[in-house]
Length: 175
Length: 118
Image (tube, rainbow over all chains, first blue to last red; front, side, top):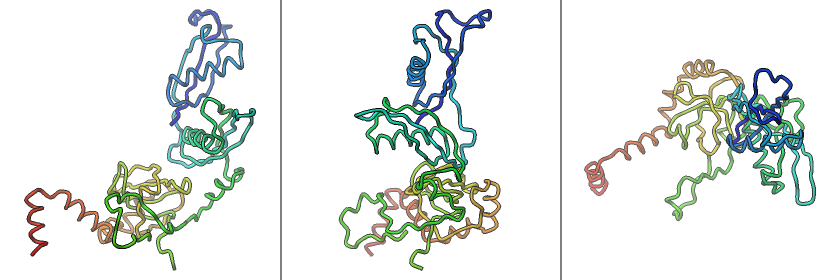
């Protein structure tokens, strides 16, 4: 699972932020990472691409995990991704339904790996936003937008019964 | 009807696997085809997501709107008296029997074996 971290670094100077130095720019980013270590690393990775600053010349001021505001409300997430395939770089828009932003991003990483063989290092999450149900574009997400949703579980195969591999009668698959 | 039991809002489910195994809960919303948002205020299941394969569907159902608050679920559960209705289901009885059997001591198991052979 990923956690969101917002980070604040200091720009080149090498000195810790002093109250008198107001001109030193501070940058903040929203990073999705499994832990703090990866979060910091990715922060510098992105910042280097955007600004002329390196980890050596900067200082991380704050690293906080941002927790979900409504962890029991199901949301539709639109995720804008940039990823490197074997032959080039592509942008994508993907949609996921989840209860947490970090859950949706985790789903995205797993989905990208499954569908496009994209490893985490070649994926950049550009933007994550909660999308209203009416604005969703993907059918797999739209199919859950039904206030009277219901479905049966036909032919239910459960994996729990490891003891009985060979049985006299076929198991019942009624739910 | 070919299918009697549906996964739907208000369906009472029995949790088979996981942290809250053995408890009942109510389907409050559905995340996707494999995950449910579930709440069991009377049985101690916090409002959380759960995988479909961790759950067994019961015949019982309460009338709640999609995504309603925990308090409403609690009110509807007590109104429908789900806890006593669930205790009468075969699923509940089998779970009880299984728990009793697991709790047998060596002597009890011997007595059971003797009782079965006579």
